[in-house]
Image 1 (cartoon, rainbow, N blue to C red):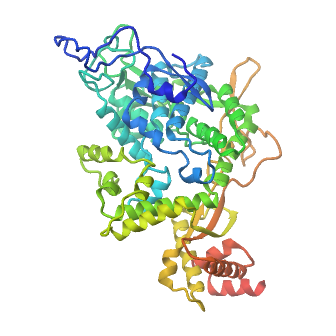
Image 2 (image 1 turned 180 degrees about the horizontal axis):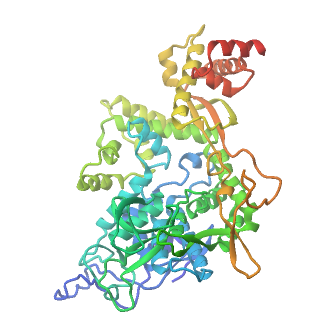
Image 3 (image 1 turned 90 degrees about the horizontal axis):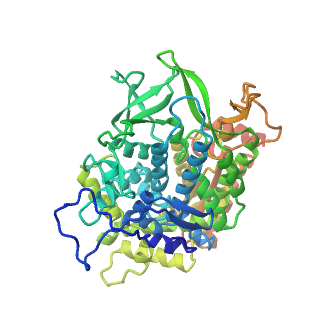
Amino acid sequence: MTTSDPEEEIREIPISSKTISSPLQDKTSSPPSSGSSQCIYSTKETTINDPIHGFFKLDPEAKRIVDTPQFQRLRSLRQNAGAHLVYPGAGHTRFEHSLGTYHLARKLCDNLNTFRPTKGTSNGGKECRRLVQFAALLHDLGHGPFSHTFEWFTEEIGMPKWSHEEATSDMIDLLLKENGITKTSPLLVFEEKAVKRKEMPADVVFLSKQELIVIKAMITGEKFKRKETKTKTVGLSDATLFGTTFGVKYDDSGNPLYCQIKNRDHPQEQGIKSFYNIPMFLFDIVSNKKNGVDVDRLDYLSRGSLYCGISSPKKSIDRILETARVVQTKVKTSSDEDFFKSEICFSYRDVTPLYSIFEARYAEFRQILNHPVTVATEYMIRDALIEADKSGIPEFALQDCLVDPDDRGSDDDVMEKMKKFQTLNDGILDRIGWYPESEGMDDHMKKAKEIVNNLWKRKLYKHVFSDIIEFEKRYTDDELESLKKSVKRTIIDHTVVNSEFITEYLEQEVFIHISTPHFGLGCEDPVKQVDFYSCNSKGDLVKRQIEGESGEGWKFGCISPSIFKELHFSVFICFGGKDLAHKIQNVIKTQIGKYGGELSRFFDASMGHLGAIEILEYIDGE
């Protein structure tokens, strides 16, 4: 069934001509009455109409996952947190982003399979591509309300290690558990019994424990940890992933080439192998830690640029997906046998499209996520969540919904918290704003409601000052946190002098926001971490790399970016008036002016990195 309405397509399940009952269903039970609910399955693919990618197919297994409460929750989570309060069109959610990421993963896997190399034995097959598609579909399942703004909230309440990646892993477990195979709802099978595939409906999802762990690793970028002990399998070494042991093939340099896993824990059937190999390049499709070229990023860049009205990298993305190939290079292994290592490479002609994609990432962070009004609204959302959480009202007890990474508790405890977590979405802001007032209302709840109402009335936190400098590698994450505190202290100390403002008031009123937009790989040039290919005289694909600092590789041109990361420094006040804003602006300009207008020198002085003699010499020199 095909429809032009994407919402309608997701809600409707194509109906097949016959009912397929669960293989675990009691065969002696009587058929359900006409009035009872009955699961009807389709082996047909569902067509999705997406404004970014056009029409694409959703296979029956993916449809089973989409049609679960845990996945449907993504409809209520906006992709870019508070950006819709600045860019009215930015109301797109993680639901359509996850579908788009699934489509790009499937498209890329199909393309790599079409042009697969003929050498070697581990180029990835249907089973491998299936796991990649699951990872792409499920990769955002653990996001909290307002996306990354929620992680600002968890930092403030004392859970700095909480991450949406770990929550995604737990949410996947909950999805499988809550939607497991039953007599009335045969949806997902996970380690229930060893069931032959041919006895199962085509759209029932079966995942073994090892397959599930591989899916989570493809989402998080977790790497195999090699064991010292020897494995019984010839040519493989024991390695662990999330505590589970796998057989992994390594080259002489200690780089993993592929891992071997059981084929769905089934009894062996004719024509089905007991094990299959997963090449390492498949772990870079959803989350690429090497260079940042992954389908997650490619979809959110295309989607964000369209809905926010900025320059789109869609053409460049389509180009690199079409020209991507698996290139094999011969490597030596511990057994001295020749083995072909498979890697995803791009045409050497596609350097310019790749740079445009990385520039689009920078532009999205610079123009959308770091827009001063976007930042102000997101801090207001964070503060409203903090105050509501402190109110003691059960409906807003957000900490009770979070799994503390330092104290996870039992598996049952984790699942109970995830059941609460799955109820959280962006609608929590409306519930805070419309929460009925009463005489005995807690002060924290009053404050939360006030913040939300100010947000609705556009009485926003005020942007007082901002500046941009080149990011220096010496600024670690801890340095940046220390920098925010030190600069805030400097501003407050000089603002209270000869003014009516007191320190206690300014501590609550002033806050510093520091962000570091980059091309995707910090201070490094991400294109130099991309593998390229060209054809030799025999027509074979040969791996190539851009010229590095050593002069090796090939030079694609003389003009290219030289700085890939910058530091944005911004000062905001909550509800102070123009007098306070002007006072802080003058203090900042005066303090920075002492160091020749160099913000980096001001930072060093604020943090005590400049000695007194050095400061005096610098000021005297100016």
